Amino acid sequence: MSKFKKFIPVNTPLINNKDALSVAKTIKSGWISSEGPSVKEFEKKIAKFLDRRFGCAVSSGTAALEIAIRSLGLNKNDEVIMPSFTIISNAMAIVKSSAKPILVDVNLNTWNIKIEDIEKKITKKTKCLMIPHIYGLANDMDKILKITKKYNLYLIEDAAEVFGLKYKNKQCGSFGDISILSFYANKHITTGEGGMLLTNNPKLNEKFKDYRNLCFGSKKNRFNHYDISWNYRYTNIQATLGLSQLKRIGKIIKKKHEIGNYYYKHFKNIKNIILQPNKLSYCKNIYWVFGIVLKKNNKNNISSVIKKLQSKNIGTRPFFWPMHKQDAFKKKNYFKNIKLSNSEFISKNGFYLPSGLGLTSKELKFVKDTVISILK
Ligand SMILES: Cc1ncc(COP(=O)(O)O)c(C=O)c1O
Image 1 (cartoon, rainbow, N blue to C red):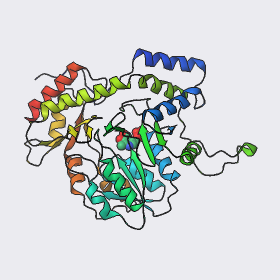
Image 2: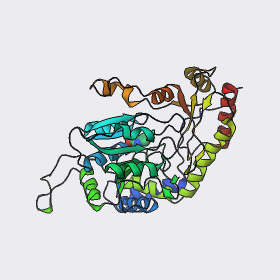
Image 3: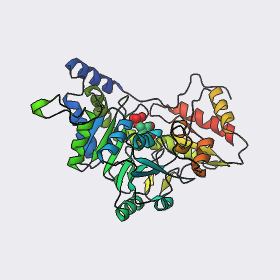
Image 4: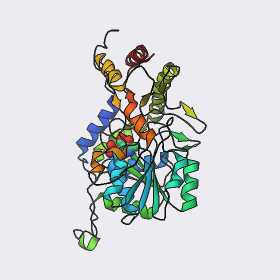
């Protein structure tokens, strides 16, 4: 099989002429900073889409997680339970706040947190669950909510990877005390960088707004700042770009399902690989990315598969690296002597394929054919 004529990146965003024109219009208007009407409009429209009372736009999903943890007012050594297999932003937000991340393994098939292991990790110090939906598949939120209710815990739902995915008839991103989104270039709605916090609690929303903007003082003395915080502001230019894409969210969701379902249909009978379920009783995978895990007895190993795909001009990414194996945390003596075998296994043996909205049908077919020729 010859290689594709040009490199197929793991993600190509889809920004159309209308998006570009709306951004140009905003720039010309002079409203280029975080001041300006589009930020508020974007917050309102995203909140409405997710059936939330409030949205607070910030500079990234990582920033949103930091503000989320801080806004809950956790004390030193309070414990936050999260999966080991996820983006490092989750654990970093907890560590920076001086609370303690407590790791749980993930399910070998869904790659989401092993819900049945959560209660084993709950102690008197546990204050919060931080639950990311991984790669496009929702967690069973009824089960999660049952635990938070039973132990009176906060819930931060990380919906960065699943904007537009429904859990039963509710949007992911509508659960818990706080939910967060990311608008990085590989997300379903992208503004280059960006993120959002969502809540139904007006007091939390006030905290979000203050923490994203340096905790300015009262009108009497604006520059007497009342607490330590960040500049995590979001620009009016970014909000304009987001609003433009939100108008076609139905098409975006449809295309994400189409790409994922196409790969799934063609790969589901390949032996010795693990794919996330295409659907569960409560959701249909929205395939933020399409991941493949090689089983132990696969004739291929991960680096040879990635190399072979690269030689055909197909970009891939390895999976997240588990939190308990991160040098950044080892240095600080976190997560000593922890073994979470599923997280370790999938991160060593998993990779994902080009899955972005800008993927053409020719590229998609070429990736599919090449993967089959290598893995079958
Ligand atoms: C689950 C999850 N949470 C948070 C983030 C962080 O978002 P950002 O890249 O906007 O900081 C990401 C990024 O991909 C993510 O996948």
